[in-house]
Image 1 (spheres, each protein chain N blue to C red):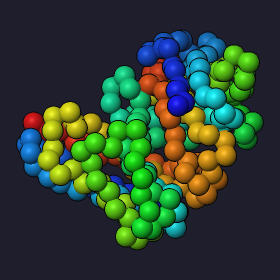
Image 2 (cartoon, each protein chain N blue to C red):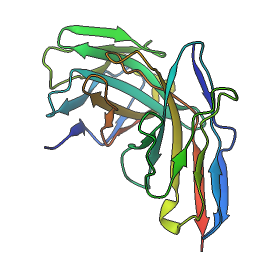
Image 3 (tube, chains in turn orange, blue):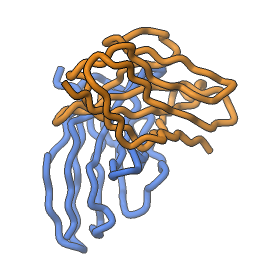
Image 4 (cartoon, each protein chain N blue to C red):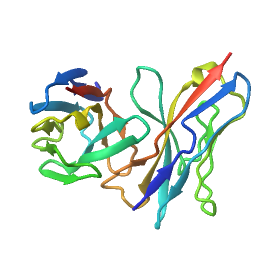
Length: 112
Length: 111
């Protein structure tokens, strides 16, 4: 069975400070990792996925298979980044089922 | 496209009542799923469907039924509501090999 752990419930930083949201996973096979974001009163939306290796809204995340981590980083936080962030995992070959296992989420607060 | 829609947005039930949460998508996605979101627990998969006529259980299926008679609709039924089912429910859909698109959620309270 797979598991996703986000150790921080709340992360509070000042505007312009670097941000790192931690995500660790356990899975015996090859995983696909995602970060989803939920802004206040909005639906959950995909921020980025490790396969795409993109940078979205200044956020990046690198899959570290040795440490089984997929931490989300941004060098300079903005107030509009304040939201709930979820790390999620799906088996890489599970293209039909696409079931996601989510972490418990980290609330990011960016203070002015 | 409206994307993934859910109704109602809010619902209050008494213990033992039944109801159906509606989910529809207009993107012709084969895969649809239901999650519940609880504080400190993230989202947990309840049921999912890989196409019309095919459904399967997720991580927390007890107390919920689903059916998939069309590609567009994937209703979630609570046969006898319990306070433990108080939660926010999200429906999602995706095409094969792609990420999931989520609905706006239904906030359910069971008294």
